[in-house]
Image (cartoon, rainbow, N blue to C red; front, side):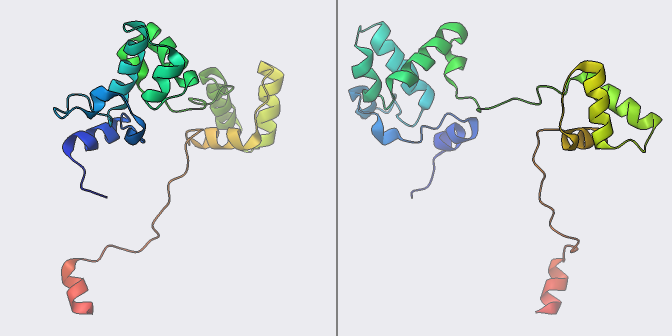
Length: 173
């Protein structure tokens, strides 16, 4: 693989790098001046939408020429209509955070645990169900009360080995 240029690095860092630029078959993206860049996912999506809206092209013909499906065309078009160009940026899928564990419930859990540190995660779950009508998993409650942000993955630790300075490495060699 060749060395990445600054634009490609930027596109990758911002989530706008098209993973399959070779699938873009539109003639504009093969012109020598380089204004139309098939690596720029946002530009490709915009041109796909423009080809349909302005040039009157059929969606089932335009979408594959830009490396997309009809379904992704409709999704992009809907988001473009409501959000403009920022709507063409891909988003992470899935939940954005815990649905059931609201700030109010979290404060209740922490306050309850402060009042009685012997309360188990299972008992705290029962208390939440009784008070708020919400069922939580005991591990979710335990993590929340411990102060760990629910929904984040644990980071790996590198052990307790101290860093060696260069001088120490040379002596040990």
